[in-house]
Length: 141
Image (cartoon, rainbow, N blue to C red; front, side):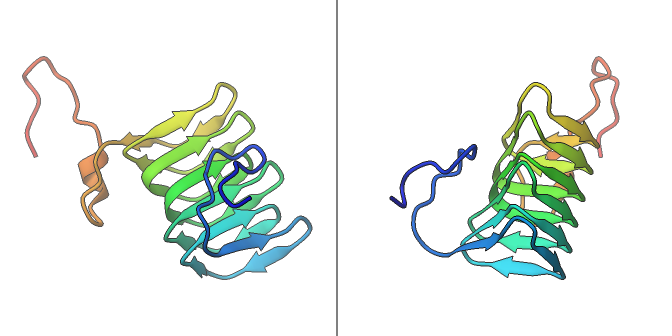
């Protein structure tokens, strides 16, 4: 059924297009999708999806990912931008920064980069960068 949870992902499928890069499949180039993209193989290039991206345990992406919701159980080398939510599972390996208002990182998940949490305003990711706390002596931007 389309409203069931799929595998290890907590992204709920609500109908629409689901594009799959299956196990053993390699894609080179940019992927743009109106629906959900599920990666079980390898992608070299950026991914843009209006709904969600799910990267399975054996999935690997070398490129930036921009979407509303993302679940990562595999590996990503690039910047991840989740406009609503990012879930990094215990088997994930991330090399790059993660931007989202909500980030869940399971124990065991590996991130070699910065996590930027906060409200995102348009294309300005600096709004999600935490301010330094210097006991009231910090400089304002």
